Image (cartoon, rainbow, N blue to C red; front, side):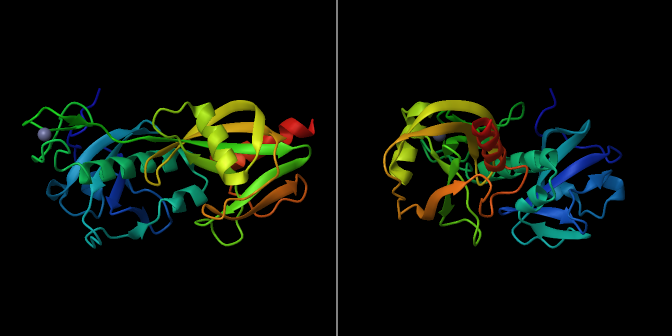
Length: 268
Ligand SMILES: [Zn+2]
């Protein structure tokens, strides 16, 4: 196992996830920088916190924690992580998402939540440790359920307050402490749409680094209740016929995958 704080060699070709605040540095063609340190137009990385975060296509990936609005990296610019999602490169999106989550974790765990002392990075695993009271923290992952619900040949879609203009998606929500995933799903669906569901089926999960969710994806079928969209969480929502859907999330998102599964499953 490679230690998180292993220093990259100057002649080691690697992927570089340079994170500043909640943004990532992408080259002018919207890609992650790749190459040997000695060949890249980077500042002296000994000035930065550099963390090994895994491999992409058999090459090492490093997180470089840059300062807010750091302008020493040239040949590209800081962008939203969603730019990589829009480029439909899910492997790169996943590793960049991991970089962003690690960066958030280190930045928000400088001091111990139990005793207030300064925390230190553990050198053999990705964790922050308090020498004073031995409290140890790991990067936070927040489980969420996301579900595509059908009623006959119609799919439930809603517009969230944070969705892009005109974009509809399926229902999602955080799992609360003490809940199972199934309980969270039934509660969220009831709170947000006022309905009950049956035939809850798990399909897949996707890390969603905005900022640290793990989306657990389901399909389900309407079982009862009148549709009543919760105005606190959603702008609008309705049942849409499969062949007449409004704008939905792009390929590569778990929402899109579940929508396609739900439509395929119930139209057979
Ligand atoms: Zn402590």
